[in-house]
Image 1: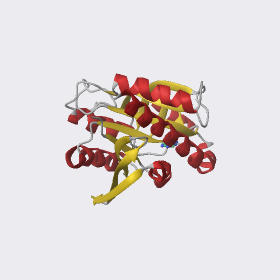
Image 2: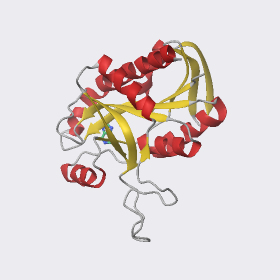
Image 3: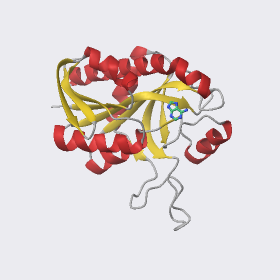
Length: 237
Ligand code: ADE
């Protein structure tokens, strides 16, 4: 039976889901509240992890060790890295990698972005979850979803040059601050995951203006997709 761990970094990214959840039981761990309950008929645990890769990773580990989740979804907002993805559009992860991990100077066998000890530079999402998440996204915003790479780092990207640098390094569709940390931790625990993100800004010089304006709309849209994904997983059981 599926038990879905759902992670958002900020209140705005989880409030819609908490509003739809039934039978909520809160448990506090490591400064986050984990809400067990039922979403769209499916057993879930929803947590606001806080911003950044470390916060995200530790919540994945707690979801695995203390709550026995079988699958993980990360929902939230992101900056677009490609012209075709506009504000409000959706991205489903094929895989996720870091744009701020760099050990290549100590060993040029390591690519920029690669974590030493891992045989891959990007952590692959689960194929079935990707298909289901894409279908859920299409049901919420038809014709506005792409599947591809997500680039993560502990930085809010709001400069054209930095954006271009990340694009040429990663070929990612969007950038945010938790996805690859979630992906790496899920990968180590052999728990299937997918990241779903709605675009809140263009990760360039317009981002400082756009982000506060569109954050809530994008976060809500992404939460709708996550609720729809939970419904589909329940129906397929
Ligand atoms: N989340 C939403 N927009 C972002 C950006 N431009 N950079 C990093 N994380 C983001």
